Every structure is written in structure tokens, then in C-alpha cells.
Image 1: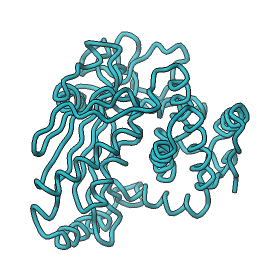
Image 2: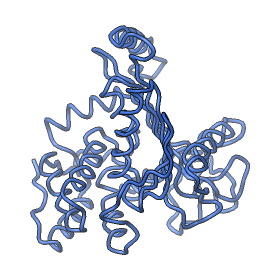
Image 3: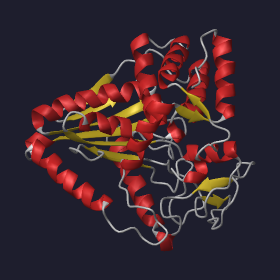
Image 4: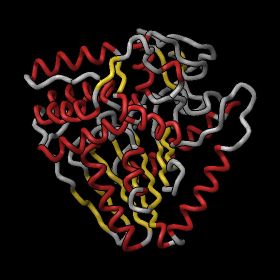
Length: 362
């Protein structure tokens, strides 16, 4: 994440990861979520915050989930319903449950089938928010597979050259294990930015970079700008403008719709504003393709070569997807997770309201 989106050191309140996990579990339980599901949901959120993915951690998302449970938008006790099943393919209905809970269940089904068939996938409909999708892809990598995860959700992003928003941010994540090097973990929206990063910018009172947003009529805003308070803006696809490759980000987002939405038998949000999130998962069993240890050794060589590359002028070093996250994980496990005071204030309110212990700072 860009440095400008980090909480300034002078404002940081560091929280114990264990305390965070226990508090988040209790909040989910207070929403009527069973204990084991509450632990799963907390694990996905803490995963994000430990790795510096604040856009999808407790700062932005937990308060949203609480609101959705209270309004009845989320089912606190969902079942995973298999709609159709082939040897290596599944269509699953999430029963209106939170994706943080349902998608890991589905991914384990995919992993089990990939172990049998070499490759397996699932298209899932009728979900709540799925959290940091790198978590789901990493589940496969932890079992010596290459994992793929993607989500179709929302309608706040403009197609290339359009003035009318029709797409979600539609992120894609791919994870692959290595030996000694930090594992490869790509997790990115197919818009110029995750929507939640705009919330962070508003919380910190900082502008967002040029090319992230468009005005209400679809014109790209090509200068640093505060997030408009009136909400009269749209998000741009990855690439921002046609000249810079917006057609590529738009095309990738559209492919996510095909795999996560149409294959599941659902429809895109542009056709039905009430449709839930949709998700696509795949796992590739490395042993079915090549020697696992040889794969990891070559990964180490490739990733090490990238890290040793000569930096461009003004750059300190070259990193690949997964390096920064592994470094944040080591720091935050040792020193606590940094939060903005506004987030701490929200926790104080919700834990007081629910009469559960508040976070422990470090």
C-alpha cells in the first residue's frame, strides 16, 4: 500500500493481534454467528490487518458486517449448498452468508478435488463480502497448489470510455508457494484502486492520486484530489484512461464476471442491483504437473532474481507481490497492528454496546 495511506506514526495506536482476534470473534458471535464461523471470519480479517491490507481488515469492513447482520442482509447461519457438481467443477450457493465464512469452505472443497483430479474450480453465487481474496488463494498454496480467487461485486466502476458505472472492482488473487523466498501472492482490484482505500483516504484527510476517480459525467480526474464528499464521482478501471490501458483493466473485470457470475448461474450487478457477491475459485495441484520441490526451487530462483534487479532511479529496491506483505506480517506480529484513533473509537463503542472486552493496546 502506498505510504500516504499508512496511519501517521504520531497517530498510531498499536493493538495486540491476539486481542484483536478474540474481540472480533466475540463481535461476530454477538451477531448470532456460530463459534467456529466467528473464528473463521476473524481469521480472514486479522490476516488482512497483519499483512497491511487495511482496505479489507477491521478498519473498514467489520462495522459494515455488523450493520448488515443487524439489518438482516446477511444470514448468520448459512449452509453451503452445492447446486451442481462435476468431477472437477462445482457451482455453489452461499445461502446469503458472509463470504469470509463461506468461501474458505468452498475453497477446501476445491482443494480436495484438485488433489484427486489435478485441477478443480468452483463458481459461487449469493454471498456477502468475501474479504481479502488473497486469503482464499493462499489456502491452496499452503497445500502445495497454485490458488486462484476472484470476486465480482458492486457497480461503482466505469467500463473503459463509459460515463455510466456498471462494474465492481472485481479483484483477482493468485498465490504460489516457494521455498526460502516470500511466497508469491498477487491480490489486486481490476479498478485503479480498491473502493475501501477511498475510505482510508477520507479517514486520514488525504487526496487520492491522479487517475483514480472520474467526475459524475465520466471525465477522468487526472490530478491528485480529495475524495468528493458529495459522492458525485465514479471509480476508473485499472489503467485509468484508454491511452494508459483502461481497456485492459475493464476486460479483466469483465472476465471475472464471466467466471464468478455467469458460470454460477447468477447475473451481474449491472442487470440486478440486488444480486449478492459472486466468486470464482480454482486450485492447481503442483504434483499433478511437476515435482513440488523442483517447482519451489525454481520459484526461489525466479523471485530472488527479481529482488536482485537493479532499481530504477529514485527507487530503493524491486519487490514482487507478497514481499511487502511478508515484511508487514513479521513487524505486526512482533509489535502490534497500527490503527487510526477513529477505528479505536469505533471498537470502544461497539464493545461497550455489546458488553464484551475491548481491544488491548501494546
